[in-house]
Length: 113
Length: 134
Image 1 (cartoon, each protein chain N blue to C red):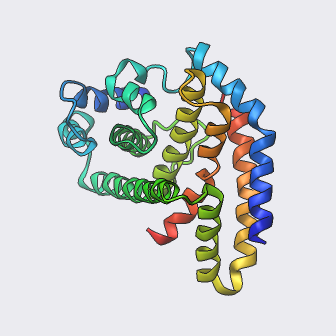
Image 2 (cartoon, each protein chain N blue to C red):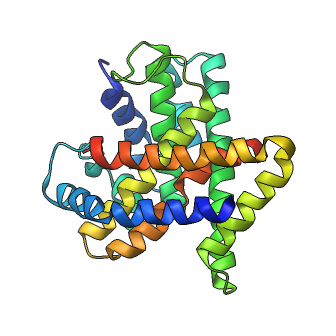
């Protein structure tokens, strides 16, 4: 095992033979081969939970769109919620979001390919 | 302030549409893409070709996140990614990157048009903000 690609291939190979297998299943099957410790396993499961949460949020957006909401309207509500929860720091946070959006898009679209 | 942000993000997306088209061309014709090797696996193929937020997409993102975290702990991360990156950061990095890659792939293969692709990736910056609500 020499690089990220090799690790990904090992994990993918665990689900390839079983189309219904989950990432959690692949991880358990690869523990020995990849020498994954319990601490590493906990860290990976934390990432899985984050992805599950993002997926749920994204599904909320799709459901809102099916109910006739616009994507922009939904984003405005999300930002309003964040701003409301942020109190005195709202302006600073939104400014950072604005700058971050521009930087992320510029970086991703210019340099990733 | 929020309206300004939305307008700014929309303008930014709009000005980058030609770049998205360039990415689509690269996805369609290139074999040096990060996911090119993964495409030989059915899960990756399904993840890229399915509807957005599909079960196969979620599983592919989880496997990519797991691979990154394992690589981090073995000192095998690609150059440019800090070995101090945490689990949440990895999840968001993978989610954002895969979403943009998938949009480009589906534009390249004609499943969605470039404006639909831009519409999808406009919410990507929000992913990092949701972490405070997760």
